[in-house]
Picture 1 (cartoon, helix red, strand yellow):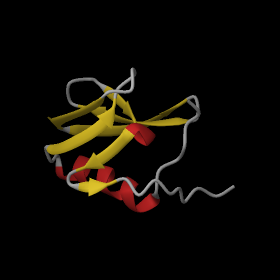
Picture 2 (cartoon, one colour):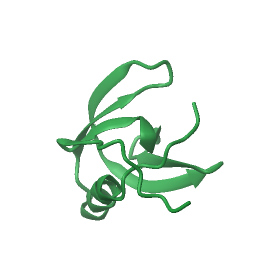
Picture 3 (cartoon, one colour):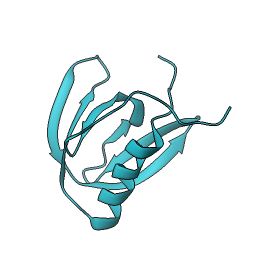
Picture 4 (cartoon, rainbow, N blue to C red):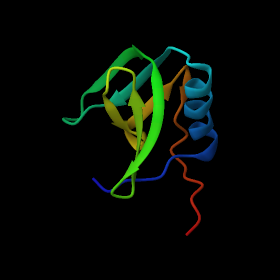
Length: 83
């Protein structure tokens, strides 16, 4: 599936959690399309092959457009990318 940039406001939640070293609840679609919900500690954001990922303290990387909910904020599914 082609990467879809996430909404800028939603992206701000990732940055805030990383800065505050905050443990959060996250729901996302895993690589086989199953919805997973877990408590995680995000530590970084990275871009690889024009896709953005949230890096977790345990080393897991989750593609941002697969995140459906982050710290009780729902993904608005609208991009604010500049074309």
